[in-house]
Length: 261
Image (cartoon, rainbow, N blue to C red; front, side, top):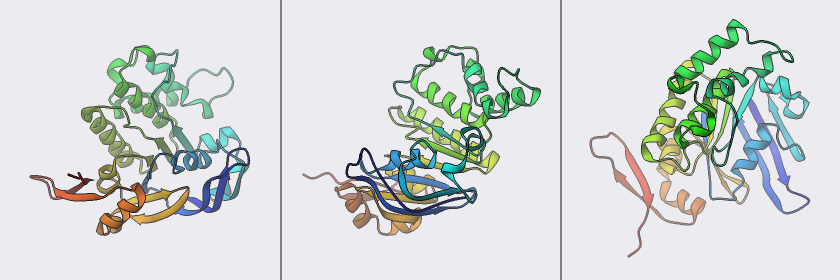
């Protein structure tokens, strides 16, 4: 589905933000991208989304170079959901989600029955149908993030890219976002790539992990394998020691930064 080979990127001839990235992502996989702030995660996702083009190396999506796609053609294959913080959109929820159908509509074309059907499904899948008529600027942070995801779902693409979808949300709304993404993957079997700062989300909710350190690949592979070597790996990735604990009543562990006394 996505093949990245020897990708490097720098802003305005400066130091490389991404350095010789090679990665292969198969159709239907779920990947978490992790690393410290400034490690290059968002830049990598923007390159995959076709938003950054002045890179060396190659990114191919469905055997075609990402730079060869027209914006409309690429929008039929992948969709990118940025961070919700600071976004102000002068539309109702329904109108915004309908905008996800733009790759399939002609200029000033009226919405088709199929468009309306897909928007209805996207609203229901993300639990946003109950406030479909509300203006976007009257949504809570968690509601806004789910609406942004609904807009991506209505686009019906094979790849969904998300930049920290649960950041700045309280634990309840973080869980709602994660369950929404679970439902989307179960329903459509699309490829999902999520940037996250939540190490436990990456290790226990995603099957595959890419870890970046200073713009270079530190680890790429299964989350289970990374967890086996979590102490050394997470110290290398985040420059802080982690310890493992057991979740009461759950058949899994969790990790957390070690508190120094």
